[in-house]
Image (cartoon, rainbow, N blue to C red; front, side, top):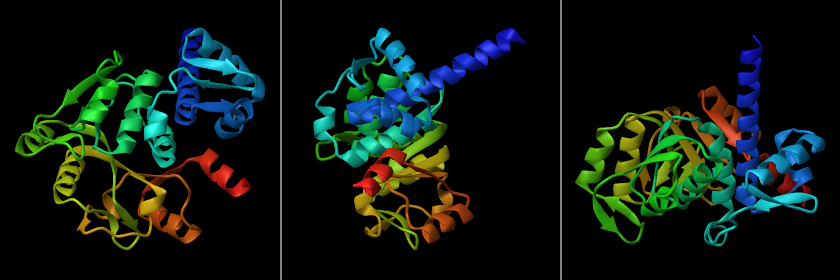
Length: 267
């Protein structure tokens, strides 16, 4: 019984550390109060865990907070939406999951989160940007599809890519879209990307859609899927109450970045 309690405590602490790392890495620098409010933990607990993470060389403690150990150019290259969405998405990945990441900047940010939080996962991707983030990650098994290189998206495309996807059973597919409305669902502007993402969804047990704020209310040329095909929708800010209830009625779970929403409404 004591051993079981000890194992449960270790799992709980591991998840807490991952949540803290994801939050810190997505914003480069945070305060103790930010972490306390967002994660629902006491200030004393946050300070204790930050000491532990610093001892493990995972964060740098600062006066009143902490900063990412590797505040690299990624934070300058990616938009705030990508960092916010990836910080939420990382909480849906468990050790030993088999996941697929599309060729978006969101997926690159999520790949960085996977590497920095140490989650042990198998990652399938056609994105060279994603592959570069994970190529030296000892915690990940990286699978890169074959295909023809496309410089505009920094990804591999074509028949070889699609054939590779068909040979995998994916637990969770993480995707983005170019447009999103409740009436038409997610839409894409690129025909090949629509085909690629549709195939990922067909081979995945769960489809998790990250929706950047700037695409909400917009429609692109090609329908990606019906809303009912989605397992989760990740948002920076919540939709209005009617829209959130409509998603709930379809059995779709939503995940909203609490810090971004609170910061927006307090400004």
